[in-house]
Length: 162
Image (tube, rainbow, N blue to C red; front, side, top):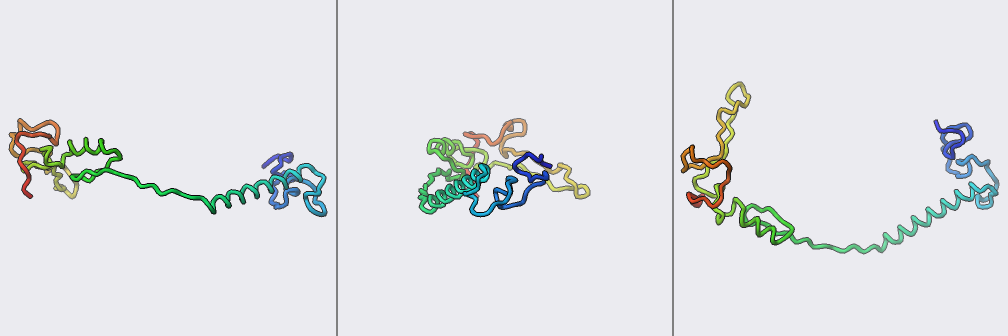
């Protein structure tokens, strides 16, 4: 509960649900316009309301004539993987190392690439991982498999035929 001396409470200390600013501030009701009220709090409340109404009217007037400018955004897209970049030089660097670019000669575009496979569940519908196989190269012996995939500029690379 708010204190009784708060401007947000009435004389009994309850929140005032009154639209009249003078009554809201605990001023006794008066006859005639509020502007003629001798109480300073009433005149301040009326002035504050008038200023808020004028500010809202100025905003509405600006909003009615506000001009927005359309902006065209240029993005640069990799022709192989469809990733986009904001800067042309960044997009060119990406294309030069994109795993899906055949000129890079990466595992992803190689005929010998064996993608990672996840097996299905085999024991009571639960995945156990017994059918999982890591990404690998089909022409390298298992002892010579690279530690990281995909490899780029591979000497064993052959273009995929599909």
